[in-house]
Length: 250
Length: 169
Image (cartoon, rainbow over all chains, first blue to last red; front, side, top):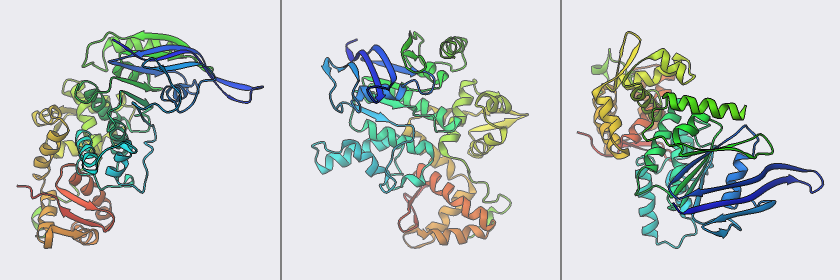
């Protein structure tokens, strides 16, 4: 499959030049079309920074990030992000929050309205159009976050701990919904990159798991999972991989 | 239009859990091939059994699962519900929720008003005939969430008005 994203010898440091804190070091990785990649690692290993580098919210201190062969400089059109804490505007309704995903795009009012309605329906948010975030459960809030990301039809969907602030039942449900979207060729983005600290979740959902070391984050392993879907989250193969990856991180 | 006919089946028998949590529980049951000990599910999800019960109650109330000697069993209705997509689930839930006497009583109450619309306070007063003030107050967000999800009710939090979105059969 064609390559979408490439990181070449990427290092990211924060702080002063004299006393930098190196968060990520010498990261070489690529993501191809039709790949669902999970990035796991201990807390503070730079997982979230990696996503911010890919979308162009921050620049590497050293090395380069490429998207479809072009160097990433500034925020990448064609990518959208979902956040752990949903990042919704409390004073906007569900429909208005979702419409922000196409803010700045040259679209007629009718076209905007149509796209909002279509994505709300797809995400099971029909009926909640006029609700405010405070009236929603965590699961519904994250659906709004997903709808806002997907409305722009992104090629790459980046998810930063998307299920971490949800209770276990809601997280179970939303993971299934995201996998259903991923398997639906009409709506699926070309690639998904999901950062998580939950190894079970990474192995259950992804085609590939990239394991980072503790700070500074380096790639410890890049594991291709050749498991058919749908998967049984309680299968021996998943347990074995979870043990193996947990062993690397610990 | 009052609640007399639902006495004995108190209005407390409304789902009091988020829709997504109930669906999550059904999905876990499906992973366990449709039958599993409730304690095992709680253990697996690192939850207390008590935390699981509102989802179990809601799913049982709607006929999506049965409880038998500590086991949770996914019913055929539950399987049918899971097999549907987002819109299909809403329609399915719409039909099942209207079989709950409590929800039907609320819809009848709304229907007895002009434009099939009541204020939050009017609904609260109606619920208080059946339950404590505290229970009535806490029931409203659940009625709104399940009503919205199943496309039965529309609630405008700006003016606090609740109305029937479409007239269910």
